[in-house]
Length: 85
Image (cartoon, rainbow, N blue to C red; front, top):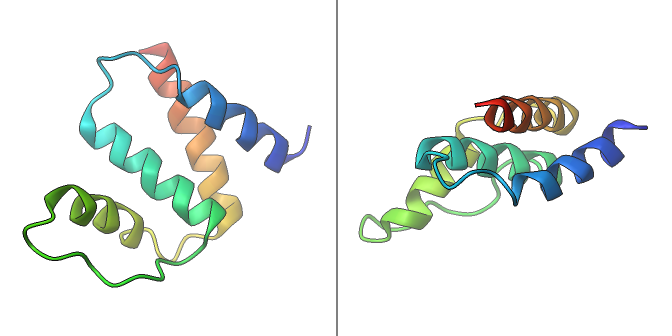
């Protein structure tokens, strides 16, 4: 199984993570997913009153130098960790 196929498998598994998954962990997964599928953050930072989207943007932008392949690997690792917890 190639990296892309394994990544797609774990994106499906991420949908079934426990309800106890923290918002911080969800933001990490969001940033890794966006980096893996889109690449570098390509939008402007949302306004200060849009807290949810701003947090998501920050999570994605914080890993802007990570390659898509590396982001896929980190995403898979993070989902595995969260499933075990």
